Image 1 (cartoon, rainbow, N blue to C red):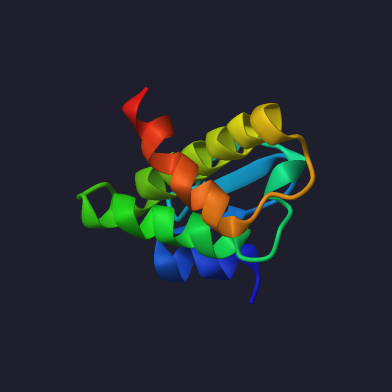
Image 2: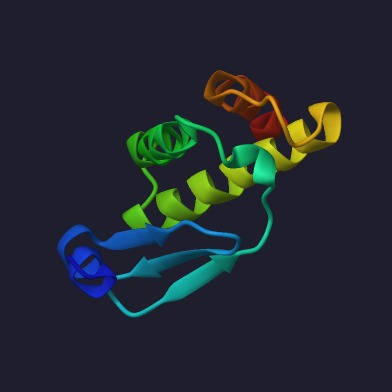
Length: 104
């Protein structure tokens, strides 16, 4: 399925990479440039998906929830990279860092 088709079907899509692109069905898009190679671990995408789901459950639109999830996930990865370096991060470390990111 193409990104455009996925966006049309779900309301938003996230294209994760060095820069992360968030697209909306109305043609809007946002680019998040923050992040860290510390996020390149198994389970990181699951944490990102869970973050987006939590923002959806709080009442944000699909596009805004995707954006908030991407930004919080990236900030957690950046903070972990600063604290522990780029190697050895686990998905649970990212999840554990999120509450501290959201309190800032």
